[in-house]
Amino acid sequence: MSRPLIGITAYFEAARWSDWVREAVLSPPSYAKAVDRAGGAPVVLPPLGLHAIDDYVRGLRGVVLAGGVEVDASAYNGERDDRVPESQPHRDRFELALARAAVKADVPILAIARGMHVLNVAQGGTLIPWLPEVLGNHRHAEPGTPHTLQISVSSKLGKAVGDRVEVVAPHHQSVRRLGNGLLAVAWADDQIVEGVEVQGHRFGVGVQWHPERDVEDRLFDAFMEAAR
Image 1 (spheres, one colour):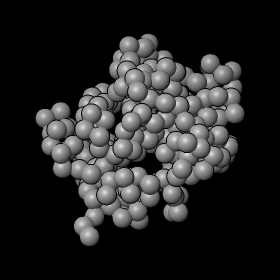
Image 2: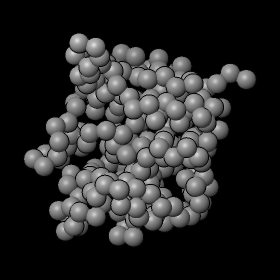
Image 3: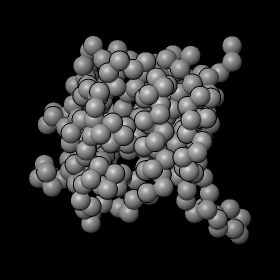
Image 4: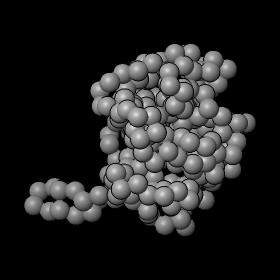
């Protein structure tokens, strides 16, 4: 049986090889490896113009909206916070359009970290631009600190990973207002949303953590089952 083609969003970044430094299309290998382990064929998608979006949606069996730099506040009519790292508007434009097209076409989506924010904004939602200021602490931004999430057992996410999961998910931004057709399905103990789903979609799941880093992750298996 042929493997389903799974698109993975990527960066344009300066990269060095030998004596050369050039702009390159970059994607952490953990995403491609997770897709491969789950039985898919990974395809890295460069964030070029929007002309290929419809072709991607027709040709791919699933889309991974990968993690990365924060979404620019202008994408949801917010005010930029100077503490937020410089955004990548070309990547925002490409991924927002890809997310909208994949939702409309019922193409399975696994949106990870930044990808969950992209999915939320693509559906008309907004973000908290600097979460530590809202909470009065940096607990969600601390790297390497695990915390336990409560997950809706009736959700696709809950059916894949269970009703409780311990994750490491450092982030400075978070969902503020949910986008149209999205449901919150996972929460930290302070009620910060760390998982969302697209209602009525074959598989439209966003998570704040990085399941691609787990060599035995059940979420990628569930995503791939939907893609088949």
